[in-house]
Structure formats: C-alpha cells, structure tokens
Image (cartoon, rainbow, N blue to C red; front, top):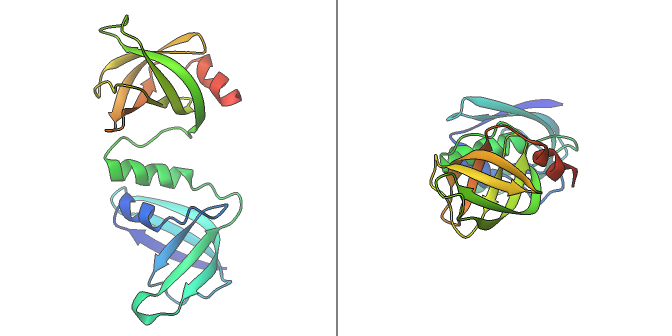
Length: 187
C-alpha cells in the first residue's frame, strides 16, 4: 500500500474534485505521481485554508493517459467516512461555521418563528438534523444571529440562526439539544 499526500488550497477545490457518484465516494486527483490503476493507497487529503488533514484508504480505479491532463480517479474503501472532510470543505467554500456534529437526513415538517414575533409562525421543513442543530427551509429565512423557536414533533426548541442561503435555508444551532433531535434521528 502506497502513502499519497495531496493538498487542496481550499474547500472549493476539494468539492470540485469529489467523485460522489461512487457508492463510497472518492476524489479525482490532477497530475498524480506514479499512480497506476489498481494501486491501493493511503490518502492524506490536506485543505490548506483550514490547516486540516483527512486520511482515507482507497484504490486507483482509473487513470487518464493524456499528457496534458493526467488524472487519477480514487475510490474510497468501504467504511471510510468522508463526511467530516466534505462538511469542512462546504463550510470553507460558503464561509460558514464548520459543523461540529454529523448530520442526518431530517424529512420532518416544523413550525418556526423569531423570538421577537413568536405569534408569526411559518411552516418549514427540516432538511437535516444533528445533536447540535438543524438545516431548515421555509418561506422566509430569518437573519443570521436571530433567536428562533422551532416546534418539531410537539417539542419547542430554542436556537439561533448561524447561516442562511438565498434559497431560504437556515442553519440553526440549538441552545440545548433536546429529545426531538433524537426522535428525528430514530425515524
């Protein structure tokens, strides 16, 4: 097994090199040094802007021979969890805080409102959830820093908006993670 180090300037380049259509994910490396199809590798992926390195077991599944564009397609081995690297790359690309917890698909409808106007509830949808918060989409996005009440599965959660997107998505960090988070994870 060969040890290979690759450095990306920022999360944006990691995301553009990510090969997600494989069952276990992978990366496309430009100008690989002495990698051949079938090689098993231990890959250290460094994101320079974050000063973080992620390690994966993988295998070279394809190599392009064209001299102007040498590329190696690396498939991660089963059981390699690239989610932390992808979360860090996404956060770096979008200039949002890096996630502290692993996210799980949400799929639940909720009602939410600003602390300042709790009577003006909007209906939203939890896109993903973690022990520390959720990603929510609704008809309106509250501003970053706003305190928010989220009612999910009949439980009222207190949180704060940490980031938003133009598509009315919000990242909400819960003040006190509650049983509703476990209920979503158990679904």
